[in-house]
Length: 472
Image (cartoon, rainbow, N blue to C red; front, side):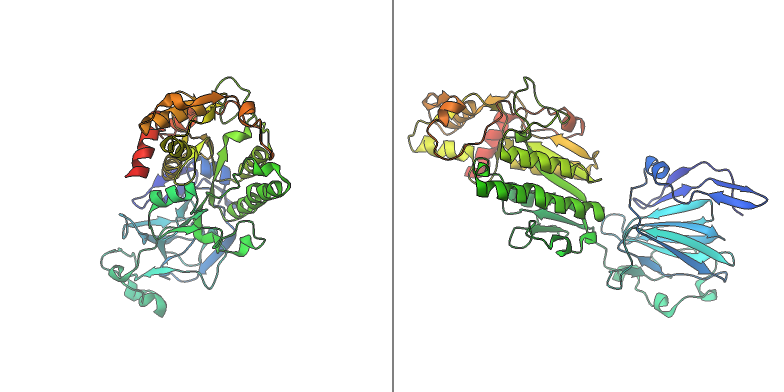
């Protein structure tokens, strides 16, 4: 009999992500009423905001009707409309809980959230039982399922009505035992721009995990008009966009302006639409150039955007677009150094060649090493940090470009006094091509990401570690 008057509450199970909800059911002589699905209240109790797109109903007129253990490629919210069922759930996902079992009875006062890859099966305990389920992907004949035999000895499910006394389809009777089930891998992580400086660091961070897919422009062009049909996007949980137009000065030219807007805004709009439609977490890398650099203290994530040049304008526009995606991380960085041509490598080369360079001394900020960006992204994703914007650079006292150049000369065994500091205006005084305006203060406040549990590398030690990695 349905229990009336319970408070909305959640119960964890031994299977990660599988949670049971008590539902308030209000009844009288006329019958009963309940809120079967209430997004705001249920997500407040920790239910994933899983974005259902289809509602199905299963009706069973006979006691004992038993459905096989099926693991589907989507999340599922199951509740009973009328009657009562015994449910059995088996974790068929890769990981330490593979094979874990949970069973319980469901009536109209209970519901259960089943994550993708957890096998579920139901046995009716009353005649004329109907249960409903919301799913966050449309049914497809090409969807990949996994199955487990109802009588699997390892799972050892104690069915209320013995399986030899109930109605079971022939197909369900012939499903494999647990030892023959191939664990379901997690949804894919797509890393775009995997051959760039940050992309290479992400390759090192994520390695050759089979669920991680790396692409460059030859295999996935995010500026292409058919991007939304280029993948079965429901198979992805995360997109990390490490591709961008970063030619700050070239963006001031007619051709560069078009290319910068295409890569940093138009393509970002398509990615944001894909992520929103398919409940994908979108990770995007931003820049200190979204600010004008006139602030006297470090910039926080909430400071108003005020870009100076075309590059900064496109990055600021991209940030605003990404911020509309329900699941997003914007990683704002400055002065990025990675595996490739960069300021540090240039200074080391000049030192070795005996050249005494003029280096800008009126721009202040911190270096950001791509290894730290990759590690920070990994941390936010694996700890399920709150979505939003995070500043991420090296830590420590801000420096000018000239200060960093002197550090590089010192680390390479050369006299740092060979560096001559000059103003930005003097440095570009003889330029013949368009030059983008630079923010004079690029220092970003790191409080938010520190509170999220990520320890940013100290600037001087990070520079030493960078040299050791590129020279080892």
